[in-house]
Length: 465
Image (cartoon, rainbow, N blue to C red; front, top):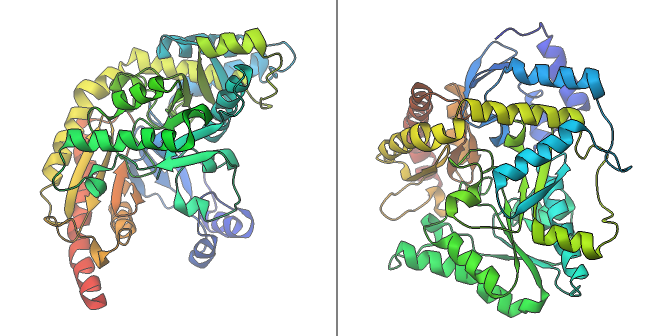
């Protein structure tokens, strides 16, 4: 893991002086003297400017499927840049790599997805999906069909459209008012919301039926689409119970509503299928994707569009006045193509389903016996650990959710593992190339960090009481 020499103290000072980082407490960053400077990465590990090496349990930000340091991806970018670094797709033009990527992604999505619209980020992909859904209904002569139903704690990006579509309260509390025409229903979060007398089947039905109830409240003639992540990632790795997604699809079909899946996190092998909707056996009309499309090596995202929608756009639409300067960027497309080639060549999607995913599930089940762990859950290579004060009653520390996740996360990082805290959960999504030994290392560090957190949390909240 060779890295260049950097003046880390100077970089941290410059960070405070000039860099406004995303999703950050900027007062805290000033007070601690700047960010931790990440200077290198290889395989499943990152390294900071002080030479500290950490196992990356988050694959960057849910995205580095093939791991770090892939020279093939750097070479693909170089080769494309020397041939055609950039040209736009606005002027009845397109680059070879862009067209080839569209065809490849369509083939991975399968029927009925004939076409792909490219963007730069997951947020932009969601905005594109929203505009396509609403424009589609305009073309169908039903312009009043513009409401999109999402879920509480759903995450669909940080643009105004993405925040509006998402159900994150902390985001809704800042920077409004937001885009109108969005509704949010309960999430299929069994650990928090399933009643003691309720079976998994009954909870799945209740969570899905909340969508139908909202459709009826709004009026089916006013609803454009239901939008959801197959597994809610940033919301805390909320894995829906069996039967939830087929019931959602049936409700959408019953009322003639578009079904849209946000695959920004789940796509490209994360759940052990190319896309999460394939794992759950449903067929959406629109699919947003990003992150794993290029393993984060270059910014690119896409929306898969069904042939029925495409034919409506072609037949009645005229201009679809939407797009970005870098939509279908040739270099990003070339890197994404090479990334998919690596995923296929190394059989990483099947490996996640048959080897590494089951190994993580077993390790997580063993971790569930820890006194602070209320529940562990995983699917493929995405997982979460719920931290509670009382396992039997599911009581949270301090009686309120959200007090302790960051405490355990910071201990994990100090112990050599990069993970993320969501409320009282530790969540993870390591690179798909992670080995079984590295999975054991990851879960072992979480266990050690929980052990170290136990006396601290018990003392802190005993004093608070």
